[in-house]
Image (cartoon, rainbow, N blue to C red):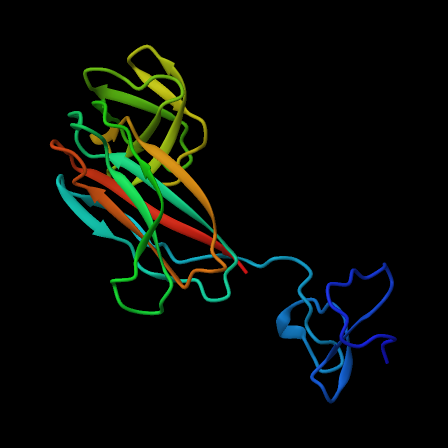
Length: 241
């Protein structure tokens, strides 16, 4: 039996055992390997936060100029923190007008209904004109992109997006004249010859405290200025409980 009952916010000294009680019975709490291995003799005790990679809230897809879209809704019941990952890319070279695409993270205090969504955080993508190049076939795990046509070529440090086949974001490491460029990490997917790569791609990560929030979604506002262009978006989330 424990020496004290009902004490709160106590730090355990190494080697000591914590006890749990339902008011009638008291039992020792030890760390099980996993929740599945928890038993009456060894109740589950999670000594560290549990992180969960959620299903993508908005799978990579194109969005037309002067359009809006909304991600899937994520329940935040029991979730303490959430990191929202936003990938943005261009599908046209022309510049935007007043500003680029806005990604607005919205939160709700209710489990349903749409009149309770409130803005929680937002980011606005760039509005400058983008470069477009065509390339030879790219195999999965390649790092060198050979350019076949284009009025210019991305520069070192640029974030770019390939849209042929599976959409993929890449970071330019170095450039060899106008013939090719090398990306920092090997590409994940194969991309067919004569595919397109756009510059002006961007990626954002927003770390949010969500204990007092019931639901979360992301609104993609590609109608934020007088002149807009087609884009690609992808939105993902990791939660911590």
